[in-house]
Amino acid sequence: MDSVYKIVFNTIQEGLILTDHTGTIRLVNPRTEKLFGYGAEELIGQKIEILIPNEYRDMHVASRDGYQKRPVNRQMGSGMTLFGRRKDGSKFPVEVSLNSFLDDKGNRFVSALITDIQIRKKAQDEVLRINENLEQIVTERTKELYESKQLYESISKHFPTGAIYVLNLDFKIDYADGMEFVRLNHDPQKIIGEDYVEINSENRRRLLNMLNKLIEEGAVAPEFIFKDEEHYKVNASLLKDTSGKLSRILIVENNITQQKKTEESLEKNIEEQRRLNLLKSRFVSFASHEFRTPLTTMNSSADLIRRYLEMGENEKIHKHISRIQQSVVYMTSLLNDFLSLDKIDSGVVTLNKQSIDLSKLLEECLEETAGLKKAKQQIEIQNGLEQIESDPFLLKSILINLISNGLKYSGDQGLVTVSTLMVKDEFQICVNDNGMGIPHAELQNLFTRFFRASNAQEIKGTGLGLHIVSRHVDMLGGRITCESEEGVGTQFCIYLPLKQP
Image 1 (tube, one colour):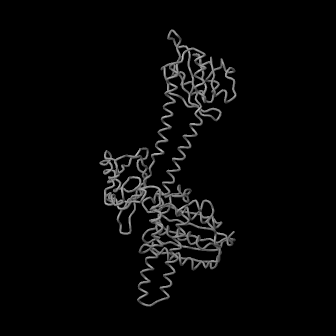
Image 2: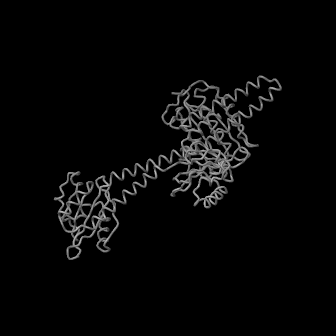
Image 3: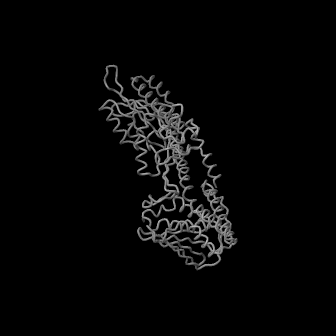
């Protein structure tokens, strides 16, 4: 497993930095070296502020100290632009996700997942620049307009995705033209004399307010309207006659539908990138938490093997070698299935249906969760079944997860009960605990990926467990229910068909 973790650590395409509670860098991956231009030997042992621009270092030290007092997994600088500092002193924009965790000795560490967002930032800046240039062009050109049909026609041709209107002070249309009429196959002459506000009745209130304000104040901000499934930006300016008297209103409608789609696509891509970064960040926490139980089993079995070697008890040695092998297979299966959750989403997991000795499987589940029990916690089995047909790996994964949760969210003297029975043409397995319970309003989100109940935020967990359980139950053609009451306990029941489809 060390080789697998090393591969993940060395190939992840974001910078990954591990610091201790003092902010001292303890570990960096190759991507971090490439991002900042330092070798690992230059960073390890240094304060994290070596990667922060000089002007932000003092503020970062104070922020870091505050984070250590109340460490929570979060994304840094929401709504802000953060910068990293390379070895050569240059700065670049970054996105940072923080995760805090304790090692087996109780020492606190913080992992930072760092993404270089230079390309995304440039794209956003370019969109802003284009918008600002467009507004500047409209403003400059509308100021130069006067009562000349030839000039109106010239202006309309400069807006290939828009339309030009000239209104009198009663908001009636005196002139209309532009490539938008051509695109929509509309004759602008047919609307001459009509009320501009009334022909845009779906946006009547906004346009009327804009025009009245324009006459009162002399200038207004553009309005954004929607009509016929298209988005338009509407700029309005006052026109004066040769004597300087207010005589007309110029309206420029610019079709920004494509621009809106581009912005929405860009936002969607940014959101998807954030989601992927969150998945990667959650995986770091997942790997350090969810694999702990089989690792504990392997460690305890190795210690027992060492003792049994001295006593010559070969049968017990073989038993614990088998436990180690089972744990390795279990961890490998988890890693293969959940490093990429799209493997489950795409339905490529193959069922391995076979006859199962349920008593033996439950006993294995108890052995593998024994390391999670607090001193006075108990697990009771009430098994009313013998042989069943199912996938042993998926069923075992479901039960270990539910039993582990029962122990995790129960007190020092908590009782977890596993009961089985036959119900018509399906078998039922229920896991009960007398723990902290789940808020009723949150039960509907219970099986959502990465969901954590509001009263469980201080307890370690990835929010993946119940999501994976529900997916496994679906694969087995079954269903899962949950009943819970805060301060009383929780019951999960799975119902699986006697014969797998």
